[in-house]
Image 1: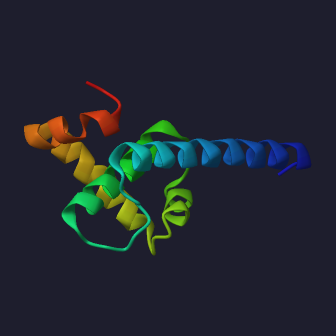
Image 2: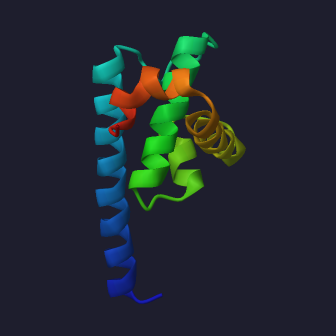
Length: 106
């Protein structure tokens, strides 16, 4: 890889990471929940899933990069979160209504 290509790739990654962090900050501000905590409380886990889903859908970050942002052990956790939110949006009206503000859609 050429030096210029590598530099462009690093700049893009930096921009995408910044965008991802902004999304997480917005989710935390709207929900009042710290998505980085290790608790398994449903309310926290759902917000954490949504934050991961939003970052994956609104950035060009790879799963491994999102894994690092959330300090997870495996990219499989991110894949699970994406599938969870996709499924809940499609099948659970209560979930959609509860988190429509966090999802940024209506």
